Structure formats: structure tokens, C-alpha cells
Image (cartoon, rainbow over all chains, first blue to last red; front, side, top):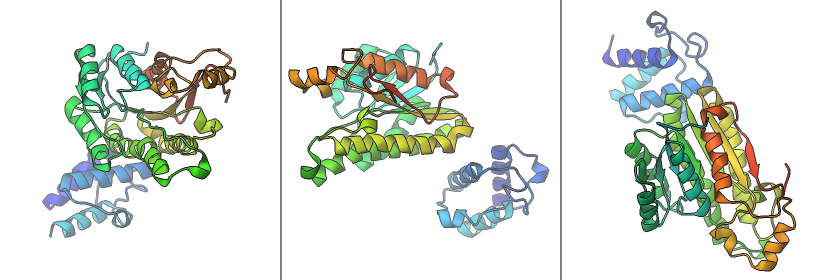
Length: 78
Length: 245
């Protein structure tokens, strides 16, 4: 697992209070991990803080799964 | 009841009558307070009077950069921000037909836009801590309207709508967002009224007197407290019965 993937998963586990084995790349924040719309905004803000990047609203809307977040942030870091 | 020991609060417009009383009351309940305003020497004197658990953070709420710096400065000084009191307000009264753009702009910028920016900044930390209080001081005229105060009434009504919307968004996170709407309170803002105006106002106040800043501060202490956890999106009218809403 890449460093970015590990950091993303850690944030998701801590923020949503879910079991680590549920936080797989295909897991949808809302449907699979029980997040509400406010949680998704908070996750985006947590990613912004952790990775020192800005995630515009239109990009944030495309981040629906753990994998979406990882690939978005990996692209940003590249 | 209403113990605020260990809580941190930022009060804008703390150089004014109501803001000063609110800061004093929160402090008396045990909170650490950051007092803000434009007049540093007045804030310094106020802080000296309160003694410990007080921070002075001057800011000009008509200036966007100054507004944006305020919450981070308060959080840096106190470690967190549990209670935001948007109290600062200005008036530029004038009949609507003759109201100048700059008088409209200034009142909306200080009374409403600054409150938006401060609440937006403060709510982030509150979300993380799953607790917080945002209290905005509005006015009875935001509900009733008042000749000569089209700008001021608009700004105060705007705060109510803003607060209700934010309250709905963050209620599930232990954050409450409320307003206190004072009626006519004895402060510098009402000192400018002449005797005839004062008489006219008191004729409409069943209590038969102006309110005191301490009576507004008591409402703020309540809304800031744990005991008011289930009160959100509300406006608490403190006006001696002049408008029963």
C-alpha cells in the first residue's frame, strides 16, 4: 500500500469510526461506510489538511469512494 | 448551572455596552475570553479589569483580512474556540430613499458578512470537537423593521436566516447556532436618542424601561451553556415585551 493510501485510510477510519477491514478502495463513503453529507465535507477538509492541498468543490463531488480519494491525492502529489 | 469553566469564547465588539457585558458574564461563569474590537486601549483596560483568562485581539470587521485573521488568532491564543459571539455592529441610519450605497455596504459588511466569515472559520474546529456555540446578537428591528434602519434591519434579519441555515447543518455535531434579539438597551447606541424619542420608545415597552446590557449577557450565558444544548436555530427576544414574537 502506498504511503498516500495508508494516510487516507487512517483518516477515514478515525473520522468515521469504522473497522479498518471495511475501508477498502471500493468502499463508498455514504453507502458502505455510513457517512452523511457533512461527514464527506469533513473528510475532504481532513484530506486538504493532511496533504496540504486544496480540493475544489467540483473535484470533491467526484470523490465518492476510498479509492477515489487515494487516486485524486496521488495525482495531486505526482 | 450555566458553568463555563474550561470553555473558550470570542466576543466581537467587546468595547461596546452589550459586548462588554457579554464578555464579562461569560468570564464570570468561568470561560476564558478573547475580546475583540477596534479600540485597543479600551480592550486593554477591560482586560486589566478582568485580570486572568482574558486575551485582547483587536480587529476591524470592516476589513476582510482583519476578519479572516480573527478566529485563527483566538484559537492560537486560547488553544480552541468553543463559543463565538458575533456582537459587533454598526448603524448608519437614514431614510431608505436617501440611503447611500456606502452606508448600506458598511452596515452589511460589518454586521452580516463579518459574522459569516467568523462563523465559517469557527465552525471548523467546533465540528472536529463535536461541540460549539455560535451566538449572534441581532435586534428586534430585524423582525419588526424600523424606519431609517433599512440597512441595519436587513443585516440583523440576515443574521437570523444565516444562523438557522447553519444550525440545521451542524446540529448533529453538537453545535448550536442561535441569535439574541435585544430591544432597546441602555448603551452608547441608544444614548444618541433625544428625550422625545426615548419617551416614544418607552411608550411601546410594556416593561416601561430600557433594558440593561447585563440582561442581554444573561441570555448569552444561557445559550452558551451545556444546559441549552437542545436549543438551536432560535432567536431569543430580550425586549421588555415591546414585541412578542
